[in-house]
Image 1 (cartoon, one colour):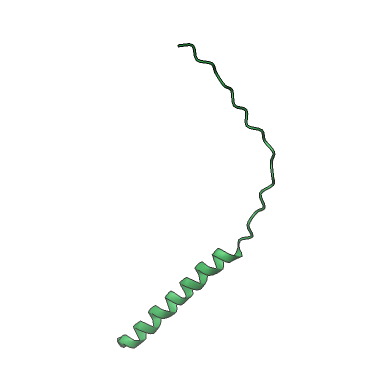
Image 2 (image 1 turned 180 degrees about the vertical axis):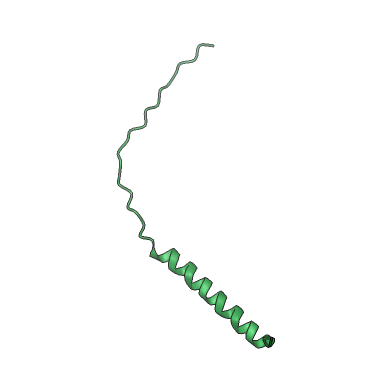
Length: 52
């Protein structure tokens, strides 16, 4: 069984790294961000009077 030359291993490594990086970039940019609908919610703050 013939062995692979070191330059072929280097080419194979670069090919897998390039494929992996392209896959990550595609997954990052393919998702459409969902728009946040503006909700007007009033925050109710109940103030308590402390009796010391």
